Length: 194
Image (cartoon, rainbow, N blue to C red; front, side, top):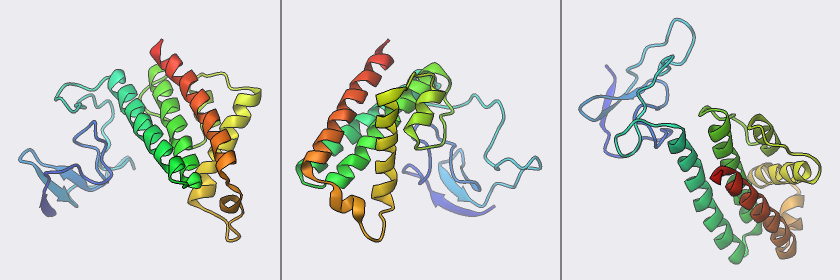
């Protein structure tokens, strides 16, 4: 049947809102064991853990998950990242503060997407694309801001050998960009409160 491990904690790669979203080949048995290598590949080519029309998702409190649970999930993640962003900025780690600024906006955009479109969010970090797919109007300066914030995701995670971006990020530049993050964050929170 596969390797059996006690499953007392959340499994790596799992969605905190569900108890069944694991890596392919992993599942939790009814008696609370994580079993690796137990799933057989499907004939239709979909991952072993995929079930079409599945509606048996459960939230942390044992109830069925709905859109509001997913919106809350993305908003709470954004709020944690927003707090960490402030701490990183104050400690002088400006590059990572900008990286988290990108995540703050990405998660709020995904909350907007869930609220307005559906729970299967786009699997991308491109803020402009997520906003467009969520039905938000992003033109001119807003589009430029989204494009600029998206570059922070890449530049910090994958810096060039010369370290150009990392060397250019000053306190003033980071403060200016994080002010933009705060403005966009407020706009998105207003949309989510409607």
